[in-house]
Length: 85
Image 1 (tube, rainbow, N blue to C red):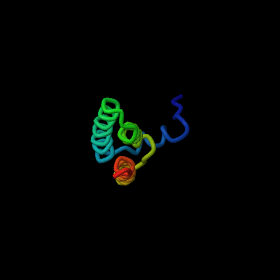
Image 2: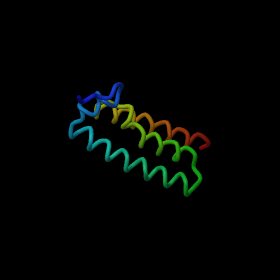
Image 3: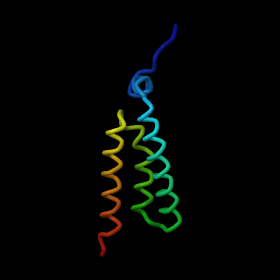
């Protein structure tokens, strides 16, 4: 007897499409770049933005939600980076 996992993971894995996977790959790569930049230059805003961009694929259930969350994360990181100027 095959038991389907309960919760978000079991339901969302069955609904993935190519747009979601491509968006996840792109935002994850951009997030990794932000993460490495933030670690190297000790920029907390870039480091947190990188972690957020990597993690949004776990919370979004569609590609458009992922794009919206990524835009919000990048806008907040921009505001944090330029708040002293």
